[in-house]
Length: 139
Image 1 (tube, rainbow, N blue to C red):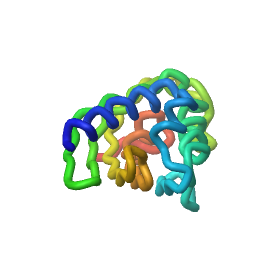
Image 2 (image 1 turned 30 degrees about the horizontal axis):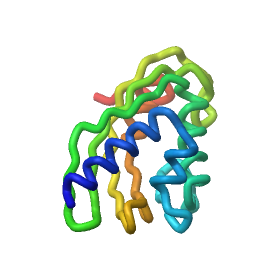
Image 3 (image 1 turned 180 degrees about the vertical axis):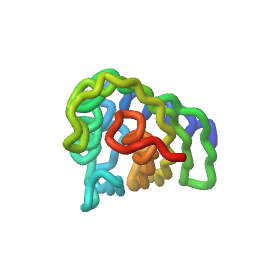
Image 4 (image 1 turned 135 degrees about the vertical axis):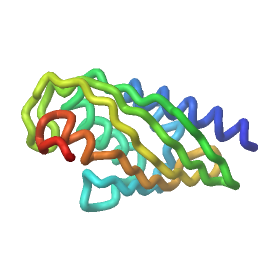
């Protein structure tokens, strides 16, 4: 079972790095809900996920996620990613700075029938905002 979830997560990384709608519909259940710090409301289904990816890609057109760590327990998967990209568009109202980012994210997924039905996404937005110059350096 663990190998199956590792395979699904590798396909998921391919999906988020390409924003391939076909993969979105294969991997994301229509009943899926996503909790993201960039949205005050839950996002739903593949369409909701494409909204999150669209928001990220509008600010960082070359953004790529690297899966660094995976922990699997039952039908739940915990992950740690590194996001890398160039701030070449407006992100959360902040105009392009041209700065490169490297940010960690920890996400938790729940699967049913080989599809994601729930995700809690927790990117390090504080670090991202500091790296693009929207907030002052800490310390």
